[in-house]
Structures are given as C-alpha cells and as structure tokens.
Length: 113
Image 1 (tube, rainbow, N blue to C red):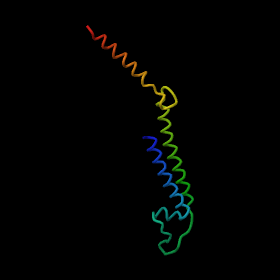
Image 2: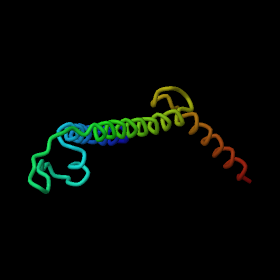
Image 3: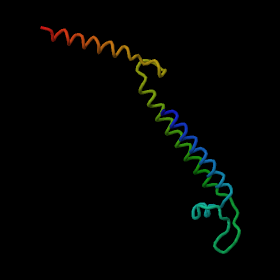
Image 4: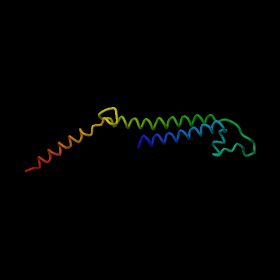
C-alpha cells in the first residue's frame, strides 16, 4: 500500500511538473508570478512573449528534491526493518513466536502448584 501511494503521488507531481515546465517555456516570468491563467496580454493590451527559464529550473529542482526525499525516506524505512535479511519476506516471525511460546510455557509451569 505504501509503495502504491508513493508511486501514484510521485507520478501526479511529475505530471504537474511537466505542465509547469511547459508553461515556463511558453510564458514570461511576470505572467507566471502575477496571473495564474494563460493570458498573454498585459494591462496596456500589448501581446507578451518570452520564456521564464527561472521557473523551469525551479520546478525541475523542486521535483528532484521531492523525489529524492520520498525515496530516501522509503529506503531508510526498508533498511531499518531488515533484521534478518535484505528481502521483505526474509523476516522470520516464527523465531519470535517460538520464543514467546516457550516463555509462555515456562510461566505456566512455574504457576503450577
């Protein structure tokens, strides 16, 4: 469930990043900062053209940091939960349960009179 949620979230942010990157290539910086719509006409009625490279670079760097952060947290969680091996199915729950069963039997024997 965690892998699916993280993957879907990162796919959605990548789609949004692509949209913002394309918008930065097609609109001037002050249009992106002041007007969230795709209106290419300023207050005087002049047609505006240009590319906002700063917006493109910021969007790409922010997406890289987001992906790096999510995957780092995910990998750290995987590494911290590997007491018996490198695979998720290597965890031997039987070893813990065997010890608990033996401990429970010892307690019951000590309670007998």
